[in-house]
Image 1 (cartoon, rainbow, N blue to C red):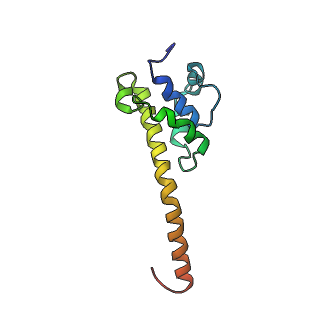
Image 2 (tube, rainbow, N blue to C red; image 1 turned 60 degrees about the horizontal axis):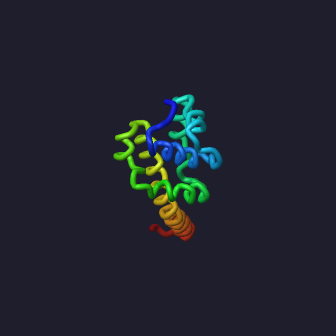
Image 3 (cartoon, rainbow, N blue to C red; image 1 turned 90 degrees about the horizontal axis):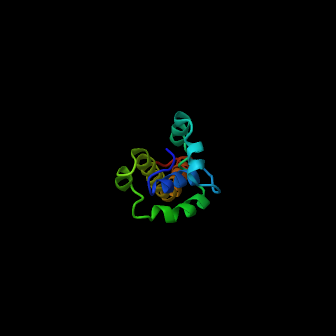
Length: 122
């Protein structure tokens, strides 16, 4: 594809940002990123969703707030873009929840370990 449908470039830009690519987000860079579909898919499957840098999350705020940045709107343009858009939204939402829950999990584990040392059960 020589150029993507309108709006799809924002999807590839969002994926590039999550992958730590902050400089060049044009269509040529996106095509390079997706050149090997199996390798690209594997990189998304193995993405470290627990440790998204704040820099990436900040860079995504404007993109995620676009009214057309959702699976339904993208499906009208490209099923591939719709699936990547869905992935971006899901990964960012997962990370938002994880950041809130992780400290609670850690505190619960610490309390359980302390209780075990004292011979108590929680």
